[in-house]
Image (cartoon, rainbow, N blue to C red; front, side, top):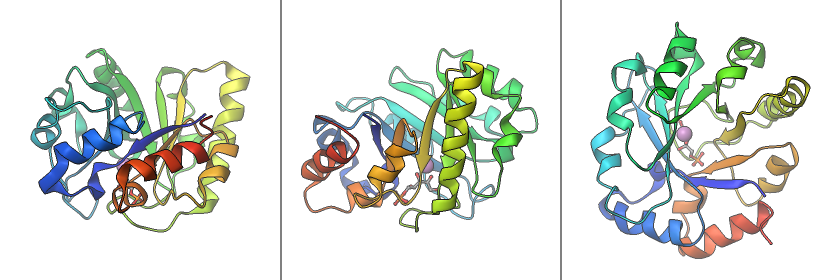
Length: 219
Ligand SMILES: O=C(CO)[C@@H](O)[C@H](O)COP(=O)(O)O
Ligand SMILES: [Co+2]
């Protein structure tokens, strides 16, 4: 089955600890942490201190998505015992190989994200070093946008490349995932599905996580 990574960007920030515990207990595999700097993307979200405020809660591991310029400056701030992946954008990293090595030097999985208009060929020389490739299915910066279906061809391409060259990265999609399109996302070969508004916008968070998990192939 594919894994579920609910994005806290759409949570109620005044009840962040409680809500992240609820979705984690209901079966979320990761907590997706969307960090936006107002430069790389036209929005500001929150920084490492908000993420670290969850350290004492019983949450799933952190799947950190840095939508920021010069991420190397801040990587260390996002390393905690619960940090599973830190993902940076290909478009924000002129020395991507060095940045990926920098993330891995903390013992954390290194992810590389691509915007909808960035083709997979731009990742050709980093795929063997990455632990995760994040295919954006919206233009980054905001939750609650519509799914850009054409991005799914990149997932299919990544599945082919991974098989052909024996790479080990996981494939994640981010943006516009809903119960209604979850099955097509899984069929394309996605390993991890980010969902923000579709999870935290629900009346009953536990039930929504269970519904998602079913669509993602849980028994
Ligand atoms: O990184 C981003 C947006 O830039 C995402 O993680 C969104 O936060 C996902 O939200 P939904 O599209 O699922 O509402
Ligand atoms: Co994200």
